[in-house]
Length: 317
Image (tube, one colour):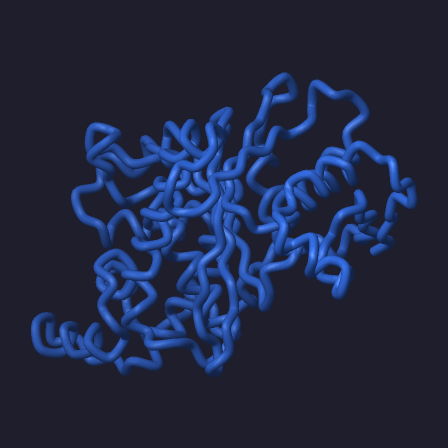
């Protein structure tokens, strides 16, 4: 990254920034000027294509087609563990006490990791077109006791999750990766607007992405929603989109909370991937007339969730 700083003391950006300072801030600036970013700065990022790869689950050592249990058992495991957010140990207990199926909680985790590898490809392939406005945010989870961050983007009208990415920081690089995936399936003539909070990683990332476009018509528009109160017109206009992504974050936390943290990055990414599959293709939404965000004819005629899970895996194989 190269930082370019404007040296002109009469720069319009500098004059406007100085005018916004109150009396106490002006006095503090005389003593500690380094705490104030008054001059215009531009960050030029030098990311390589391989550095902007979307996070994906590891290929499992065990092939799902060779597992001991039947497809119906695999579907039941994914139904309880993912769709109903039941912890792995309790899922094993339900299968044993209700269905007389004996599997260990580690087997459930192994099956979930294997299914996630296929579902990740399925999610990307069948995401479809996106809306003109998408909302994005990041939420934290714990892996081996340390904070990691899951970036999400969701379409405003059809409510599909258009991007998900797991990283160990909230910086510009993971934000760029998530936004690149969010706009990947946009049509050529589509004007995209991304709504986020005040995290500076998003405008910096959008500036990097827009620099790759040859014409202004393809550039991404960015809208910020700051704080909990509408103190500016932009926050008031786009507050509903911020609330949309916050509801998604709460739904995601409901599904990962039973895990009580993760022992590996792949375990966290596997459950996140399966959550997206369930959210986009299996979970009906009341605001969509109890339809799924990404309806598929192959799944509509199947009567049970476990049958739909096995169908998704067969389509992804």
